[in-house]
Image (cartoon, rainbow, N blue to C red; front, side):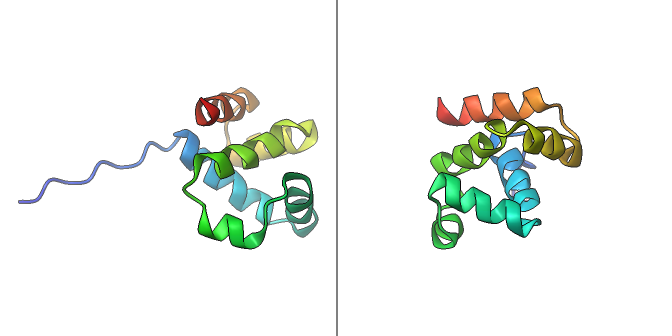
Length: 92
């Protein structure tokens, strides 16, 4: 019997960043602001979703605008500090 793949950590920095990106992209003005402020493009997002630098940029976008940080933390059901810590783990 093959070994079962471990389930991804629901609160891993990568998982949280991907969930945050989904939340950001759910609002067109916010998504446009993400692209404008980070310099990311739709192609970069699509082609580099697993890149820690891209994921860190997504979380940094939230951290730099407290209303979005608070709204994202509510939507993702995590404290804002969890998003900040996930960003820290992605950049180190």
